[in-house]
Every structure is written in structure tokens, then in C-alpha cells.
Length: 283
Length: 242
Image 1 (tube, rainbow over the protein chains, first blue to last red):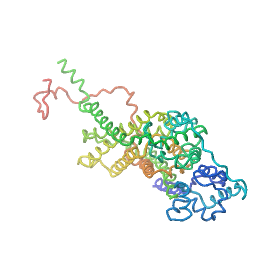
Image 2 (image 1 turned 90 degrees about the horizontal axis):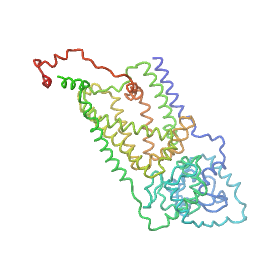
Image 3 (image 1 turned 180 degrees about the vertical axis):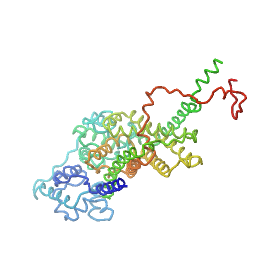
Image 4 (image 1 turned 90 degrees about the vertical axis):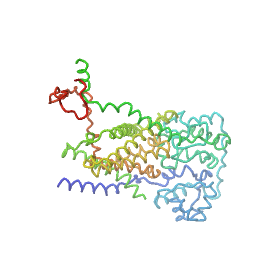
């Protein structure tokens, strides 16, 4: 009885204790840390547009409460029809900014950091981005990196584990993350490179934690995605989902039949069958 | 939502681990002889075979593959780099998933249809059976709708599970996962929580010594000659050796 009581108490403590464990150590939280870990994939400060707008002097264009709300859930604001949010969404190729699990103080910290890094009014305008000219070799390398036939230098998983491309020449990709067939036309070179090198998406960020994709690899992958995005005759891609289903079903049935063939009879003869047979033979 | 995720992916796994560890030790110490699969083969054998064998081979393969993706994620990622190897692994896992599903359905139908089995079936058996069925259906759906599970498990979920076992839980990635994956994970934690209270404990007392123990001689304690006596009344078979 005593043991039961102790066990129950222990379980209750565990149950509520679990709620109190923090998900992350935020003790060193600073705007800079967050900006360089999350925002940098899509935004610059004074270096021009990437996936999203250049954030230089963002505090002069919007009030703080609006920025906090937008950073935390731009999706909700666009859905609610906030005119400024909708306009930003339209201006940026209708690419949604993922919702961020930041507190008000953390967003304020990021804004402070942006403020400190923003060029003073009247200084030179942001440099104009010159798109790269990719070679055929870079496209091929990018294709090999995408499918995994060429390993990423730091051991990260191949892109097609989670992403699909509608491209007949390669195996169907994963469907956990977004289809990247039109990624390049939507995000352009800066956006694609920004997301590959420092993904703002939590699952991708985790998958490549400590397995950074090198600059060369990012460049080659961008070359391949540009080729796929801009080519017209690369097919529709093979949908392997149904193949997986039917092969799996067929294989499963074959396995069940195999189990029957190998073992079905074994349980139906008694353990002394051998002795019995021998006796008949010598009779 | 944050609190719910924190509970489901931090609190709940720790509860599951604690209940699992305390439960299996407690049960072993205080009712050792209940550590069994509680076989009902004597009561019904034919359907059991078609349920139990596909189920066990399938679940063994799937269990060890999940374990491998958790323990040696980099090797799985490296293995999957070649498309043919990836396909072999994915289709193989799907095949075994199908055998598990077939086995579980056969076992469930056998349980509820056979009156001889009702007295040896507990509510927990039915609960566990339904839980395993849900889990395998979710797993098959996941494999079909959210490709390629073997790689993303190794690259995204394995670090999360490691973070749990190293007491530095990080749920940023798992919180952003699709609902099906979350349900499959919650199902797994639930199975671990129920483990000590079900017949699953038989996994822990695998009779591995059977592999290397000496042969046993089976002796009958009644006169064999009498059985072969043609004068004895036989209800089914006439002895062949007389």
C-alpha cells in the first residue's frame, strides 16, 4: 500500500514536473543571436532584398506593436486582412514568413539589433545584387547533391529525403517538406541560397545542425534548382507514392504466403514423429 | 499549443520512461510469473499461426529498423543516399508493415470470435491490440503520405529522441512536424507507458537460452504398447503399425 502511494506521488510529480522543464535555455538570448540564427536566411540589414524585404530601419516604417505581432504570426495577420501585412505578402512573391515562437521581449531585442546595424539615413543605398551565371557542371553537381549520389561534405541528408521535384530524370523525392520545382522562380538566387545555408524552418535547421552545407554546395544546388525551375521539358516527375503502396502490398502478401510455406506444416506433427517413423521402419 | 507540445513531447516521454522502468522492475519483483506472453495456443492454434507469425516477423523488423534509425542515424542517412537502397529499405519496411497489419487483424478477429479465448482475454489485451492497430495504420499512412520516413526519422526525430535521453529536451523540430507524425510518436509513448501492465513484458524475458541449451528428451509416462493395441477403442485414427 505504501509503495503504491509512493509510486502515485512520484508519477504526479513527474506529470507536473514535465510541464515546468523549459524547452530551451534562453539565458543568453539576444537580438543578435536570434537574428543570425533565424532571420538571416531571408532578410538582410542594408544589403538588399533576399526572400523577404531588407530590414534596415524597419523600426521607422512600422510601429513596435505591429512588428511584434507580425513576427510572431504573419500568417494570422494576413488571414485577418491587415492591409500592411497583405501588401508585404504580395510584394514578396506571396512567400509566407513562418510563424515564430518569440516572446515580445525577444522581438524587441531583434529590432534593437537591427536598429544598431542599420545604416544612417542618407548613406549609400544597398548594393545591387548581381545574379550568378551557373555552368552546366555546377548544375550536374547540384543534381548529384540533391539526389544524394554525391554526399554532402559534412554528412547532411540528401535534399530529396524530404523535398520533391517534378523532374523525370531523378527518383521521386520526399513529401515531408515543400516541393521545390518552382522554388527558384519564387525565391530567386538570394532567397534559395539563404534558405539552404541557414534554414529558418525548424525541421531543416535540426537536420543540418552541425552538418553545415558548404558555400560551394549551396551554389551548385542553386544552379540545379534554377535549371529545374526554368526548364520546360523535364517532365512531370514520377509519383512513386502509388508504386510504394502496391509494391509494399504485393511484397506483404508474398511474405505472408512465404510464412505459410515454410512453417505451416511444422506445428502439425508431434515431437515424437521421428521416433514413430523409425519404429515403423524397423517393425 | 506550446504547453500542449511541451507536455506531449517532454513531459509525456519522461512519464512513459519512468512508468516503464518502475513498472517492469516492480512487476518482476512482485509477480515474476506473470512475465509471460500468456499463450493461448492450446486453446486455438490454426488462426494463431496466421496471426502470430506475420505479426511477430513484421514487428521485429520494424522495431529494429526504428531502433537503428534512432541509434545510428548517420549510417541510415548514408545508406539511403543511393536511391535503390532507399527504395529497398522503404518498400521492405512497408511490406513488413503490411504483415503486421494482417497479423494484428487476424489475431483480433480470432480473439473476439472464439468463445474459448474469451476467459483468457483481459480488457488490457483488447486495449493494447487496438493501440497497436492504430499505431501500425498510422505508420503505414505515414510511409505512404510523408516520404521518405527512414531518412527524415534519422535526421529530424533521432536528434529529438537523443535530446530526451540526454535530459536536454529540444522540441522545436518535433513541434513543427505534421499531425500524423505527432500522433505516431504519442502512440509510441503510450505503448511504453502501458508496457508493464500488458503481456508485452514477454519481450523482456526472451528464452534466448533455448538456442544453446542441451536437447531435451521427451518421455511418456504411459505404456506406448497399449496405445498401439488394436483392441483399444480408437476414436479418430487406427494405429498404422499394427
